[in-house]
Length: 250
Image 1 (cartoon, helix red, strand yellow):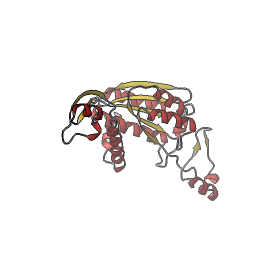
Image 2 (cartoon, helix red, strand yellow; image 1 turned 120 degrees about the horizontal axis):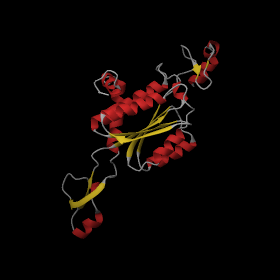
Image 3 (cartoon, one colour; image 1 turned 180 degrees about the vertical axis):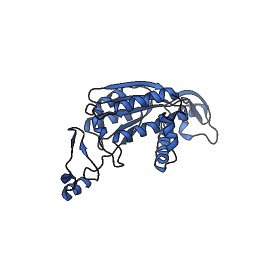
Image 4 (cartoon, helix red, strand yellow; image 1 turned 120 degrees about the vertical axis):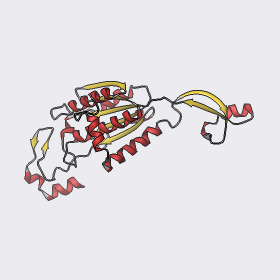
């Protein structure tokens, strides 16, 4: 699909990139993009004499002692960063977000923004998306056609009749990836479960990890509300109860 096509998800992102909130998100992602190179995850190239302006962290002290002058190690950076979208596609994503949209719509737009920024840098984008019954994985590739396909896969998976969430399955699959990457986790889990914390800890030993958690709308708010697990509407008298409203807002 052409990125200039109005139906293109990347074209829709470009049309909304002037929004302040999206600009802030872009800045946050850009910072994570730069920090993935901290600590030299690249391949060693050679050693040269230290010159003013070189990073002192690159000094090889043993080689410097042997040479009698400061020697630094040089590294070759990968030309393209690998970005992995790890998406929770469970049915709970069909619930409402504070904006009035569904959490799935918010998560999908976040995925759109990540893909848009990755394309601008020439980065490769991979996908791991799933729930309790499904798991889909797309390899890291660049180009508009690949990104549009990837985003459509996410869009089709985020439905109200999806199986329950199982973020652990998604994280376990991402842990198996060996290439150092920026992993962007899209979920509605406000507080990771203990098992998820362990998977995130293992992820952070190799990758740069960013968790984007989509919040729930207050069930006591205005407008229709439903329990997506039971697919049952919440009675108006419950949503109007002051005690429940205070408890939900706490």
